[in-house]
Image (cartoon, rainbow, N blue to C red):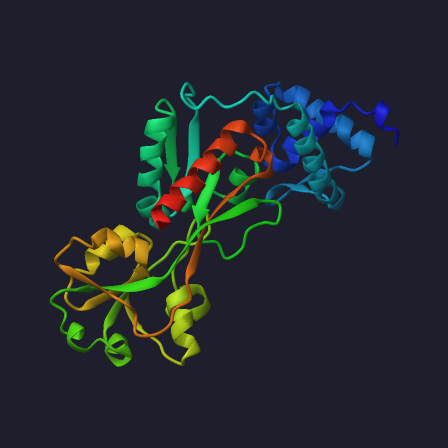
Length: 313
């Protein structure tokens, strides 16, 4: 097939169609009529001699040929978008841009307040839209609909750019009235009741199985390595909730240091090092390759890195 005989607009149509898998939604996103979108799909099918999208019980499903074409077309369009993107500098003082950041509860508590103070100083007209991990899915990030995701990730797609914000160790948050403080060793830790807290990655979460150690995360994996298991009585995805529960006399909360230190002036709780070794966690920020060369996004990344340095200090 000679490329100069191909209407390149059809590649844009195909990219959106394979992403949305719905002719009406694709037409709306492209700002064209549904008949025009249907005609574009017909021309693509004739050009490629493949149905591309087939109606099944699960809706419109890509064919094998379409699945092969999709990453190549997305990569080509991404490169073209990058080449055509204006390179005017980002004017922080006058910008009224909305930055959408997906942040875990941990990141929102420990990093975002410091970031917001710097934003108010350097770009007072910008707006932060803070989203939770459950608000965001992989495609939202890939398509650049979300500027940044800040969380602890078990895995990140290789196409994403990423940077470590900081490392953090763990500590225990314990009620000041908890008698376990009199002799806080591993046996006392294991004989206590615990609050589990975490929300790693992105997307809608699922219920926790207390026996699935690998899905329970850092603390329980560390215990499993020494052949031990703690008695978890509460599972939560919110650090603020966990820190409130630490005030109850019979519960221990094991969380990263920077979250626990938010309670350093709370007389109802005591911060103690855990009586066993837990590897540190890495808080990371990740973003779509579509935004890598955007001047405003580059400015945001530099600002987050500077704020993280200040917090570490």
